[in-house]
Amino acid sequence: MQLTIGRDDPDLGRVEEEIGGLLATLPLAPDARHQVITAVLEAVSNAVRHGRRSGGLGSVLLEAGVADGHVVVTVTDDGPGFDPGACPDPRTPERLLMPGGRGVFLMHHLMDGVDFAFPPAGGTRVTLRKSILAAHGSGGGPSEGEPPMAVSTRTSGDVTIIDFKGKITIGVGDVALRSAVHEALDSGATKILLNLADVTTIDSSGVGELVGSYTSTNNRGAKIALLDLPPKVRDILHITQLISVFNVYDTEDEALAGL
Image 1 (cartoon, rainbow, N blue to C red):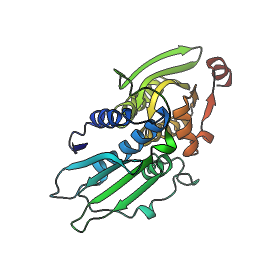
Image 2: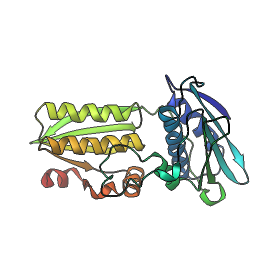
Image 3: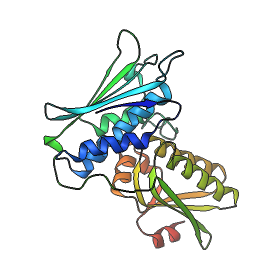
């Protein structure tokens, strides 16, 4: 499969749908499919945001297929290129609470292989590989009709609870998360609980907004905590070591007592 993604209005939903459709035809476990989709979206997001030079094509090329027992995805842009070896570790104490800089890191952790190439004519080509044999399993295809993000706010005593349903990803759920937390703070909330039980996907932009919400809340002298992390979200927070930053509760009663 091959897709051209515009930078001015990138349709990441279409990217996810097309990659999900390809993966649904392969003997991959649901967790492995999620890892591939997340890594591909990270690569495309990086290319859209950073891989553009003046007078360039203004688009990103994505190609995906199967070769030698692997899912192979390439994402190509025409930007100035960069040194992937110079990307700092986002888990270091001085960078842990920075909102960005986790995309390349997550790609390496989610995929079996990540290679960067820099064609003579310019640009960057990232190749992502995931073994089919090592990640085989059962499970259905991508979910149908999943909403990008729904947010609702309620209160219990002096705690403002924000319920999220859907994807906390670039351009959709990350913006909704930021807006919901700022609205709560502007309304005078001093204790905020983010209920992530129904979050299906989170990417580096979503993680960045969690970090931003943590910083904004602390700067206002308020408290923030996370409730009921799904395994996919918990895994990302463990990989990035942000699980140590937040107070995380398994039940609402525990959270209300802890806050």
